[in-house]
Length: 190
Image (cartoon, rainbow, N blue to C red):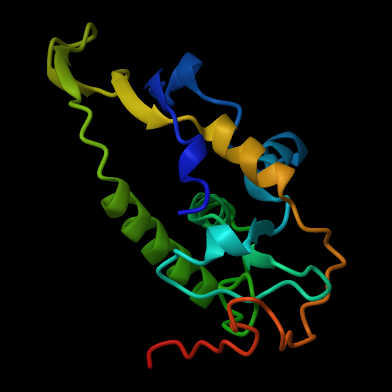
């Protein structure tokens, strides 16, 4: 993967997400937490070079007017977009009755399954420990344990440094790109 060189391990203790441990990303959608969510992933598409594109398992389109540049979006940012869509749907910000709506039930269903696949692919094996709850002495899983994570900030910086301007031409078919991928087409389910 083109971003592999920036991957570094980061030891992180997750918060429980309950009571005083709630993160600023939690709660009903509002201006503050919506902005926090969007800042995680909403900075467009990333440019990679011919040298980075060549060894990829999948083809991608060349960028019109950028000899040797190719479009990619890192999966982590798509997964975060999807999780934000599910969050918004949970709080009623998504019109579930309009299947044709890009924010409707079909989009949410896609997002839920994409998140499932991403979690299974990552397979975080950090052991959740058990402790007795102080209020009733019943055993409970403890979520606040050490996880070995990838350094998200480093991945985000890598993508931001290669951000493609939002006004880029997506319509032009590039016919003279170095890898010959200009007319690459994808047919879902085929």
